[in-house]
Image 1 (tube, rainbow, N blue to C red):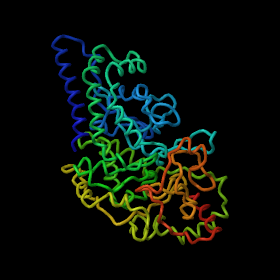
Image 2: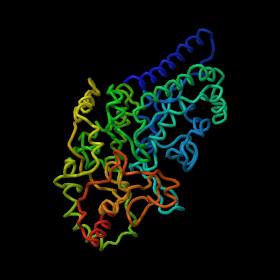
Image 3: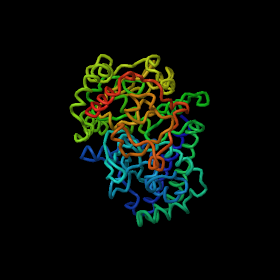
Image 4: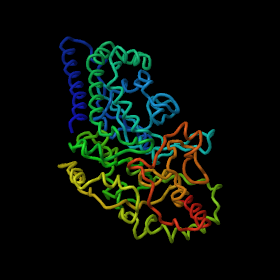
Length: 484
């Protein structure tokens, strides 16, 4: 549990140090108005705004002083990867016009305002109908452009950079937020906040050494459970499974209650899934805001995915495709299907084994220790022998496919011989013919990430159901899948 928690403890000690400074200032008769901040999360009356920007308590363990975080791309622009946009946009963060922070980030007002994250960071995607079309935000969609691996690598590099000091960062804060810090606050940032943040980032570097030498996550993917192994003090040098997987969609949760959740079906509880995600990014039993988490979860129960443009659907062809879907797919993927929400054994499914292998019985046992003494104490985690059969609502916007994102479009999923060895992800222009995002060509290469299916954990084999269909049946089935 060591490094990350040690780093966050240092930050909390820094805040305690500020409290001590305030006591001294009182004794000296110095006005306190410049120092005091609300010790409250920022919440929103509108549930959509809460989903995008509202706190659920993740700032407690992994919160970063917002003013420092905001200027890191200004000071360390050379450490950002090449890509579209500027600053954190280069890492796939999504900004709305006029916003000072991206979707999925939160603020808790402390003596030092702390930035955290919430579920929309990984579950808000974008779509363009053509290269020159306006970009559309889609809530509940997998974050198809967010590069969490590159974000972690950026923070690791920043923390080790010799330029990370008050003489560099304070002028950058003043340029970005003129007049925001008083003289006393500048002193506190110089001698406490900035040094402690640097130390926390160096602890982060230690905590994520297990990713070194592994295939890059790329956009829209993350290894969810290896960070838990780090927290539970597993010997990461002995953990050789690659747990990297796509972000799932989180819309339309009501029919998913009680189904096998996560890619390997390791938990059927929506509540445990939601809480475990919050704990993973910084919440603690004490800071977790179950009320706000519950508000968003209730909204997600009935959030519908965007409909495929009706003008692009051949209704007669789709009707023929429905009969094929009912015969070939519905038992595993339709509400009420005999196998929907259950786990299909890997031996039958044949897809890449690494994500399944990474969630071991030992980890399941540890996960079920979380929340001991709390009303929400975990008890449902288990290891399985395969991958879960999920519902296909909004499937047109959930590319790339399979649990590890190794198949770029629905056409390739149904026609295995068309699955490319190498393609590009993170480019959000839609391929209306193949039903996925454009994954080849100069634009995809320029803006996207090179996904190599030959790397460990990236295998694109398996899920051969329906692969014996004739071409006209495939076309009909694809047309029907547009309607889900």
